[in-house]
Length: 266
Image 1 (tube, rainbow, N blue to C red):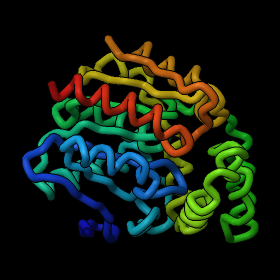
Image 2: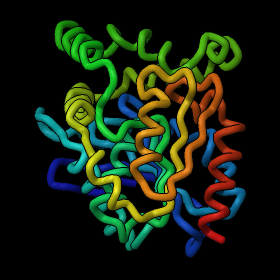
Image 3: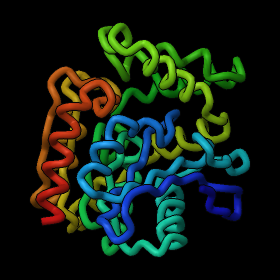
Image 4: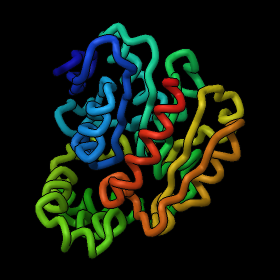
């Protein structure tokens, strides 16, 4: 389904029984809503309604004209879809870029968040800035994401995952390459300039932070910083997890997420 906006269309997918608690899932940079394929069936089986959105320039969503995005702008995109659907509040699950958006909504629009699961993400960008700038330069020079995809895939999944799940790994790689360049550059700017750290103390929604022990993009220190900044937040670390811990460690991730949601729904 598409929500028309002033810059184009935002793609979203809403499935599950009407009236059920809504779990809103937000993806990472150079991904799309398909990154949650390992989670959607188990959520539906537990009776939840699942809303997935593609960020600007990702998946089925249009990219706004060339320019710099901000996380707050991307958060407004999500809120606009919720308004369109008449959904007052959601249980939000976001990974990386999606987790940054989730933190901003929880801090700045608390009435819209019933609970927050912030996964493999940062309260502000504390990663390797030079690496990201080099990647952006490489993409500008080549005009394609091919120049950076393999290095990024190594950060997201272990070699063992590629061997064990070659078709899923290949599909995720193709999704990366399908990101529109305007969306890539715009969201990279949003990531590099993200900083909600001073607003985390205002978050009142129940929060769980899930990190991977081997994630070099958003390391456990970043996840612990989020958990420390939000009163009563819970922290869970997945041993061996790289950046896409929800894919490679789906069984543990799903167990933690479903347990968390069950506590919130009651």
